[in-house]
Image 1 (cartoon, rainbow, N blue to C red):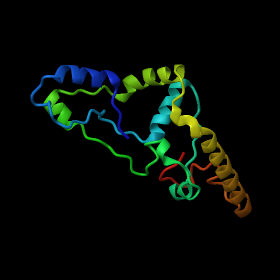
Image 2 (image 1 turned 90 degrees about the vertical axis):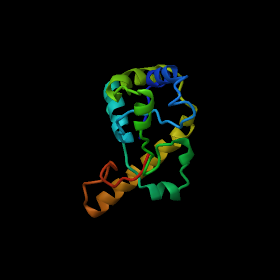
Image 3 (image 1 turned 60 degrees about the vertical axis):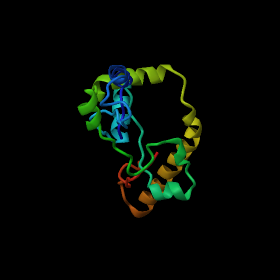
Length: 159
């Protein structure tokens, strides 16, 4: 997954409004890092002093129960990772590392209004609860200890 820090995007645009090498070009403004969603969530939780409660639910199961993937661009098993080389070469793009801007973004997000795409959050929580209960039941029935929390069950998309 790739992001761009708003200050980097604004600086690039301001610096290149009349740059003939950039005008008319399709250019990706993204950071150098391409962290997995889990890494971003774990880091955001660390910034907030929280412990994330994460669960990997198989993508196929989410599809079978009609999960609405349109709510999140990060629900793909292979999210796009964009390249920023053209922005660097043609326009001098110099992305700020995520470690420098994520704390500010997390604090701003917590202080602001929740985004509209959280409308399905109650259903996501219900799916996670039901999946954990089912995994715990299977573990109890078959004497397994792994996978009860869901984090060893598998990956490839999830909530």
